[in-house]
Image 1 (cartoon, rainbow, N blue to C red):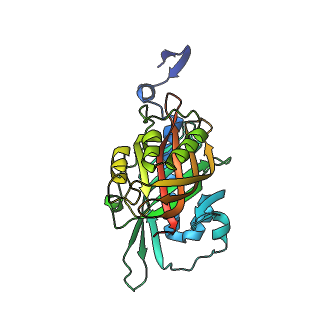
Image 2: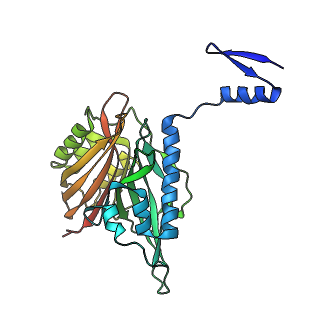
Image 3: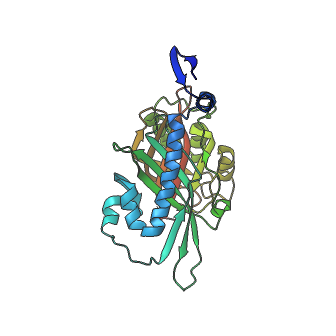
Length: 309
């Protein structure tokens, strides 16, 4: 039989009742946006990355999943392809197994830039009984001309012990764009990054108060992540924080933004002068709110360059 529908001035022919039901279902189901598709794609690629690493070894995984210009911090930034190509093939069986899962992240509206962060765990494969090690990873991904996601930046932090995240298997939490992002009025990522760095020289807390999202995700080496600005600022102000009443010199090395200009990153080195002196590297994720202002959405600081006193 023939049943005619008029939709946006187009006639659609449906040749059976079952076809009609299928067609109506298509009408009522919301279409996925490019951003939703890219988030799901990036989550899966991160999981594939972790699985490939477990099966084949770290050097092989880093060469396969990093961009040609992708950087790792060991402890200084180095080209991941160059560093790991020389280590292939890695010895089998490996002395330890690295496993991680993405728990938080986001992608740009256009689906060309994104980030993931989550817990990692290293377990020994030898008989000497070494206890597991725990920490958190932070990776920035960029879609290549081929359409593949590849890692652009990867920086990790250690944890004092297993946290709630290290149970693994948690649902992925997409970091939302926010209208309420604090007091930032920066109209470009470069301006926001510069203002943050300048303010931090006078006081770390003031920089975060002004430029960070209310939903800030901050990962500091040696601690478990902070999932909002309020808890992070409370920690900075406490005697438990090595950053209390401290200032910092942040030196940005490079930055970049998505084609859609709604998400970007910056990375560089830092020196903190507080209760403990500290040197290391940072990676930041910046987002632009609906008003057009950029704010700090997520970050990782890792003091792998030790200078504590």
